[in-house]
Image (cartoon, rainbow, N blue to C red):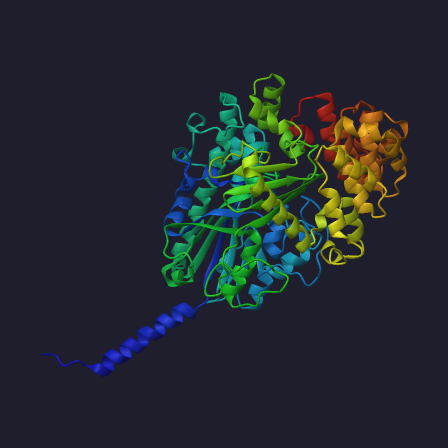
Length: 638
């Protein structure tokens, strides 16, 4: 019989125990795999049997798949501003796509804090942070940000945070670019066995099912398929470098699908994203959801990402980050609901706020005089939008398919569990009155709590940014009375005598932002506002330009008023880009528009002659397109 060496066993146990403690205390590597413009409905692990996404599906099979993950905006640059800072767009003032306002110096890109904690940070390669502070944010955040960036340039043994962004699923490929470019950028790069044929896809019910539509929608599947193919190559590199067992992997999309009714739209389709976290064996203890291969209904949004990574790295989370840490011992419990935002795009002012609890999604539309499918250059020169507009013109659409082209309701409520494509608005159904009231109250409370600065027109955000930042400005209740502004904005869209009377009265408010929202509300009132013609004409003397421009649109449309016409023509030609764009938008969405064709035509000519900056050109081009009905061609704009 062999003698048992108790001392040896004890030492072995001690060594194994030390290894276990060391493994659990070692900070993880972190890899982000980010695809663009994608909704969960188009990915295999979320139930789409036609999709070919084997690498994403494998991550879900071994990791945690989230069914209630949401972007903080519904278009790329606002979403990325929230991701990189950990701060909501409506606090930063970054919600309007392609705006350029500054951030306070104390707000950093969160990888800055990872660098301070000893991490190597790399970004391959997209930034697009939607702020004039983007250069500073990028320099502070990344050791390397380029098309060649990755974990491979770190010091030996240094933990890393590496981001890879895949553009193959971007709207440019799946919708906007001409078909021949899609063939070159996607189909020629994607192995034939991974391609999805048009005949095999399921057509969302808000599109007319036709061969032409299927041809366009197949682009979505194949763009996502190519992104999945490239994800597989990054994972192969991680495996070859023997890093798979020490790296936590996050996979997500930056916002909803790059197609009509999703991207840039304030409903659930714009916000809900695929989201997966994969843990190696070494770090499975950090998962609050247990072992891999599970699904979670926990709510999360992009402002949760920064505090989660800082906590993983052992770095202090700055007080301005209000998201929750998702992983580890310090993981905060999931909320019961959350407030989401969607704002302007391509120079078009817009404002929607959404409250979701995962199942029910409530959206308040504050500018319902515009349809869901408001004119946007980047959308409208696509084949799919021109196909949809042709189907509408030729009366080939059913009622539900026509709805996105009409004025919206002020409120929407969808039961996502029964209606994932959001076809049936329950907001006016008496059976859901309490749900609507509760979610509306949550929305209002969140707007007031966070001092939502995006209720200001871009004209004002630009003025503020000349001497301060929107983030700081919103904290001054004397200069920004957010409660008064919200009360005025909350009347917008309600076509009632009471709302109309209150809006007319608010035209006399001493607060210019209140007067602006009174005018926006009157824009949605239709012919009923004509009963107050005298008060409307008197209010045309308003000294606050955004309020005056919106009210002039109301007066001209109702009364064909000459003073209102002059105000609008002058504003269209104004050198202030924001005022010019606002004026073009207002005349775009009114019944009587022909009188403003010369001013808009002149605006475009002056841009071409370099007599003025091009900021209002896109809105002007879309105005002429809508009035003249001329066909759009991609190459005509580039």
